Image 1: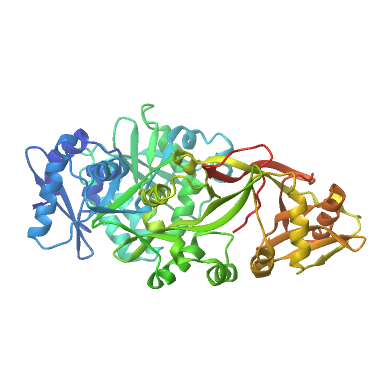
Image 2: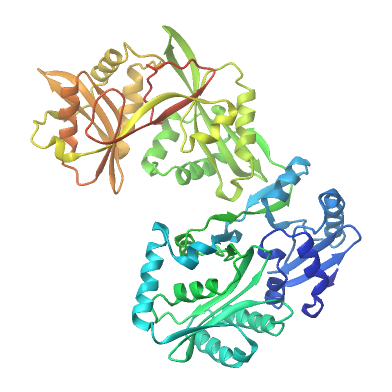
Length: 567
C-alpha cells in the first residue's frame, strides 16, 4: 500500500473514469480535497486496484476498482491484507450494486445501512429554472433576492484571477461560524483543489453584491451528465443568496450536464432536512460490509429488552402503555422469530394464533405482526430472509398480515384479501345530532353486537368473551376509549378509538344501522383534533378512500371478507 499523493493523481483519475461508480468516491477531486483529513492509500495490481482509508484510528476499505470478473480476486487480496496487518476487514460506503454482488456470491458478511453517507442527486433543470410546485419555496427566496439586490449583484464563472480575493471571503466566512477546526479542514481542502484548478477541470463561480464577493460555489464533473457540488458558501445575511448563486451557476453550465450530486448529510438532522427540502430525484444509497453471519433464532429472555425497544421505536402508533400491554398480555417468545448479528437484534417477526370463520368453517390461521428491522440494517435483505424462514415453516397455514407498505409483501404471494374505508371526518355534517354515547366495559354486550354484525360476513375473526375482557377493553384504555350507543336501553353500536397529539382515530366501528353510526360520529366530533374513521359498511361523511386492511396467504378471497384487528 502506498499513500495517495495529490501530485500523482492522474493514474487514479483514469481508473475512476474507467470504473465510474457515479458517486463522489469516484471523483479524484474529493480525494484531493480530503487527503489531509483522511489518510488515503492505494495499491495497483494488474487486474484491480485496492483503496484503503485510515480515519478515526480505524482502517476501512473502499470498493475495489476492477471489472466484475476480478472482484473475487480483489476481495481475497483485501481480506488477506487485513489479516496480515491485524485490522478487521470492513468495507465502507459500498453502493447497492456491489452489495448485491457480494450477497449473490454468498460471502460470509453482514450488511449495514449507512444513510448518513447517501449522496443526494438533483435535477439541474429544476434548480436552474425554478419551475414547478416543488420549487415554489425556492422560487420565493430567489424572487426576494432579486427584488432586494437585482441591480447590485453579478455572477462570474470561477477563474484563478479571483483566488486571492476569494480566500479573503472564505476567511471572513470562517470567522462567522463555529466548529472552526472542521471549517479549517474544509478550507485547506478548497485551497488544495484550487491549486490544481486547470488540471482538475473544476467548475464554479462567485457572486458579488456591490462588487464584493458574498457567495462562492465549487464543483467538478463526475461523468458526462453528472456534476458534484463540493462547496457552496454564502453570506446568509442576504435572503435567497444560496438559491441565486446555484441558479446562476447552473445557467453557466453546458447543456449536457443534467444532474448534480450534492454529497451527503453527515447524519446531521438540519442538513438532512435542508437536502430533502431541495427535492432530490434520488439518493445514492451506501452500505457497510462486515465479516460475520446473521442467524435466525426464537426469542428468549435475554433478547426481550431489545425486542421491546425495537417494537416501541418502529411503530408510530405505539406508545409505552400499549407496548407494555402487548408484552404483558399478548407476547409469546415461542411465536417470535429473531435475526441476530453478534447477539444484536437485527430484525424480528411476531405470530399470533387466531381462528377465522371462512366459508362457514372454523379455520386456524396466524397473524403476522411486529415486523421490524433495526434502521442500521434496513434495505439489506434481512427481513426477506426472516420472512422466508417463517413462510417455509407455514406452507399450508393461512397467514394474515397488516403492513405500512403493502407492496413489500406481494412478491411473497400475499394478496389483498380485506379492504376498508378511511374517512377524514367532516365534523360540521354531524353538528346538532343528539348524543347518546357512554363508556362501556360490558364485554358480553360488545361480543353479542359483534357476532350479530358479522353474521353476513366471511373470513372474520372468531371472538369470545376473553377477547373483550382480556384484550380489547384493557388495550383501549392505554390510549383511547370504547364508546357505546344505546337505543331503548339496548346497545346498538360501539366504536373503539385512540388518540395521539394531533388525531383521534376510530379503529373499529360496529353498528346496527346508519342512524346509529351517525349518532356515534356526533359523539366524537367535539374533539378539536383531526378525526380519522376506519370503517366498512357505514357511510361516514368526509374525505374517503378505500384501502387494504389485511393481506393474506393460503386464504380464499371474497367480496364480503371482513376483519378488524388493530394489534
